Image 1 (cartoon, helix red, strand yellow):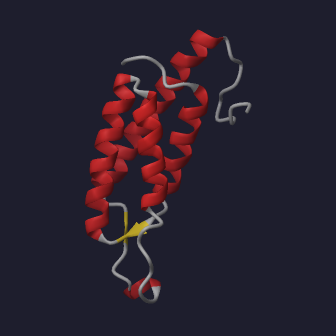
Image 2 (spheres, rainbow, N blue to C red):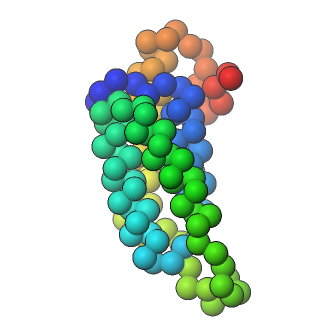
Length: 118
């Protein structure tokens, strides 16, 4: 794994991924979201904080781009498919590893699911 992305960014990524697991989107939107997750995973692996930050912002807004066109049962939206859920869980673990590596370098006592000090 590359360089650490930093605690604050790791926290933001974790929050975006957790929120995404509750989304209901049209199936085609999940395909796009899956591609975004793949690219996010590559950026995390490389420790590319700038790209991780941009992709996290894209992820945060992608769930809001789809507007509801009817009652929830009839709007065509579905929860995340298993492959997207599995990728999200893998990314959450990768972020946790990044965050742990960053704590080792900064001497920070923050962690354990606590938000970073801002």
